[in-house]
Length: 298
Ligand SMILES: [Zn+2]
Image (cartoon, rainbow, N blue to C red):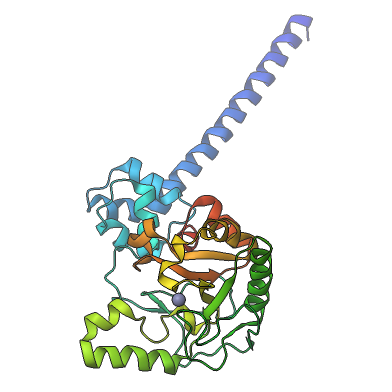
């Protein structure tokens, strides 16, 4: 073999290797794309029937919080912005109150969602309720103080509340707890009495149905300040400090004024919900509600 032949031979080998490599790569790319298209073919056909464009379908399928079991609801919900559409359906904003009720699965989860679409199991009762002895309203002395023997909260929540109230006191703010845990039976009595005397619509406007009140969970509290009516606490000058610092102690304002369309509850300046420090700070930082916090999950 001459030197020239050897050179030619080397060229042929290199060229052959290159061609083989190209063929392998091409085949891999082809397989990948074919599989992807094939994998979502059904979804594309389904959403095309509802007039959605490929670009929007792709965006939707790639969202980390896309839930395939809600496909029909995503398709029907008339929200142009695709990210918002998925979030809003995840927050059940496409449903009428009480249209579809999911029973809470993990009743030990401090972030559990209880609202007009998610309910506690019937006769649920937390297993670690403790009476709150300090920073509680006194009947006959504080406005809005309810006639109950003692106010109870779940243990972790009670401790967080005491820490919060002590910190507020250092700022000259006198926090008073006016309500905590309410039993399923008590809530049932409240709602049924209102429904029987004023009608179901009235009852649903002013009272949560049994199992659908956060007060049944022992995770929330109604607050007031010494000398203030509970439904006027936003007028108190210390209220801004409360709003600003609540997340550090694990609490969020559960029904903000600008989120009525998401929570489906009127503004309640006095109702705070415990979700734990980490989650409370995430919710606060993102200006979410608890519905949105869950809505951004798979
Ligand atoms: Zn409340």
